[in-house]
Length: 200
Image (cartoon, rainbow, N blue to C red; front, side, top):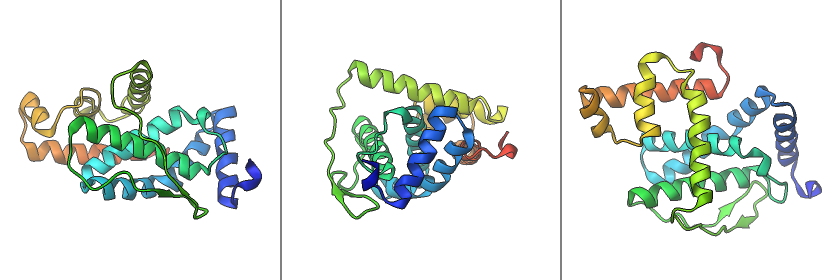
């Protein structure tokens, strides 16, 4: 299978194997640096909202890294990662019934090959519950490293999945303040994901 991979694909596979076998954080960091922006722009194209695209990017990376052992080199890692991000986006849009452009178009991987992936049902099932728990688990590990002033906001947004308006009401702070602080907290989350020491 690995013989079918491009140089980029082989590079990614080495990083993945290093991350899984040794838990080397630098390997995760390099993968994150390589794909954070492409995933963000792909998701932004789907949802048309910068803040939501950032939310979904963080969730997708967390979910992918948590399940990195499930990747097999049948496809390029980029294709697998974009599929994880795409399916996470689909789940979110279905749950929140957000109107957006088509999410069923074929994905083109780094080799120019076009792949179409089945969309799983959004009906609650044991697998989806486990995946959600895994996502929350990895996000908690990241959030625990945030500055105290951001933790409560992020927990309400990500763990309790509250809207900006709901958070504003609960904390009794202006909506604009909620949005501004969550924007800054996402920057902190990205710094933590990239392993920057000044994030904490």
